[in-house]
Length: 230
Image (cartoon, rainbow, N blue to C red):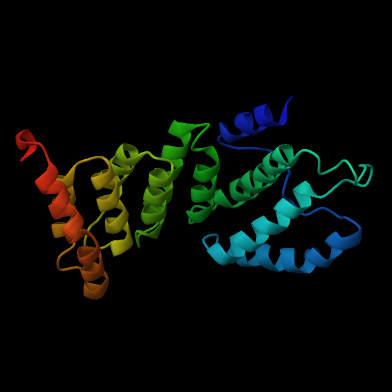
């Protein structure tokens, strides 16, 4: 099966038996990664939402996935960078899937959503919603909203935000991305309501920073709105 079909097939599944990304006994340069990889895995076993550890481990498995095999000609092994990138994505997918089974894990679900947003839209939305449900701080929601905004899906971001957002409990970063998505969807009056909803947040400084960032933008969008929307 072509690698792109393998990726799309894997990204559409809820679980996988894939061993891609799992440390194997290897030779040569990879031996230097073994202790570091084991340490990172131990850290993620304790806290699957350790972003720094996950990114470091993801870099290792990407490097393993794209390194030439022992029976591969090194002069031709790097001739298809697109295929190599897909192999790396498969490795990170397997890694994220491995740790997302932890009921406390939300960061691995964000990584799964990033990888699947263009191939499995509905599945990615479900993963983002589950991540947000697992995190009481709102950091997962904020990152999920950012993923959707970067994918040019502001309406989906609004849907996720409305379903999950707790204005006075979640980090103001969640409000920031929800307000931004609402403006991107040309809903300035909803953006105004969301901005007002974080007044009284316990992190007054962060809430004030969000207000400073968006007050003028919202006011301009409100004045530009068609008369029928005012």
